[in-house]
Image (cartoon, rainbow, N blue to C red):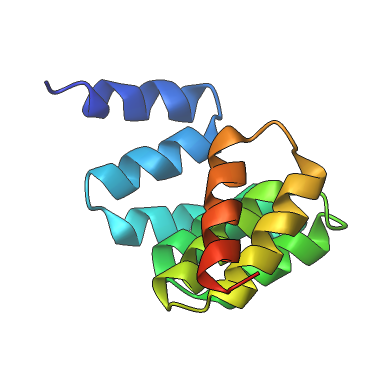
Length: 125
């Protein structure tokens, strides 16, 4: 519909960095997303959302681990991302552990409960 271009301008003007990174990814502008993430990490190195965005972009689980640690184990999205990548590798035991940690932080995630139950079933627990 052509709304992502104007959205980029609005998000940049309002300094909504997460949304701007997401739009860059939707437009397949990986280089711009990477540059923005690196710039923002220099200013706010403890922002777990940026570390998760970097993990999404690079498909490197170590960035999700960094997000989890820098958030003092309070950023559930990092554990959800780790759970999803573990499930994609068919490592159901690890996926269940990550889901349990994410749900301990945010128990209102209905999809997380379902995914955790599935991972527990697949890991014979």
